Image 1 (spheres, protein in one colour):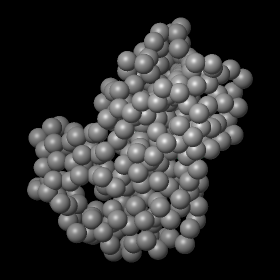
Image 2: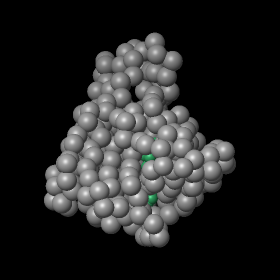
Image 3: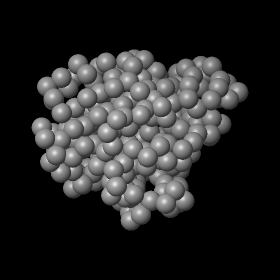
Length: 266
Ligand SMILES: C[S@@+](CC[C@H](N)C(=O)[O-])C[C@H]1O[C@@H](n2cnc3c(N)ncnc32)[C@H](O)[C@@H]1O
């Protein structure tokens, strides 16, 4: 059943609106105080560069931001979207084989380690790319702690459980955020700090339907892979999408995505 985490981590081609709707301030706000003019920053798993663009604005034209992502279609869109930022370079690269000539003051990676079966190896690689005294900041999820009020339809609860099982089957950590401090310590990082970074979406806010609707998008984009590897049936996937879309429009009151930022220095 296990078709390995590398295949499962790849963003399927198609709608990148979930990634595009993110920004530094709405989706990685805890990072803002760390950013200074002139910094050299690496954003690993940058997607379409929606967050990298905000980092580039913060470090200014005397700074440099390199965003890398292994999904070529996302990098191509990001290059087109952010051509106005000369200090931002987006490159198609796998984080395990990226070997830049110059090291970085700050390495950030948001919502990426959750997709890896070997997050410690990724963090070791990031450590090797930092300048002395450099800082690492990882933003990631605790998927097992997601909160919905009221509970969504049984079909979506079933799909969500299958999603977590499909991820775990590939060796992905459904509580990545909570395990980061321990991995940082094992790798010898210093000054480890954890910051709460939950995303709270309430009915009535303009973004509620889009943000709570992330699980329909997951079922649309990732669901076909889950069906192919036998974790849900196609009928279950389609029912979950339809019933969850109705929940978002009608009874859904609140969704809380549980995240933490964990940062440290070398
Ligand atoms: C959930 S998205 C997060 C994008 C962005 N950081 C954000 O917070 O919106 C995860 C990204 O990690 C990328 N990715 C997964 N494995 C990777 C790898 N081995 N090397 C580089 N990028 C990778 C995927 O292509 C995808 O764009």
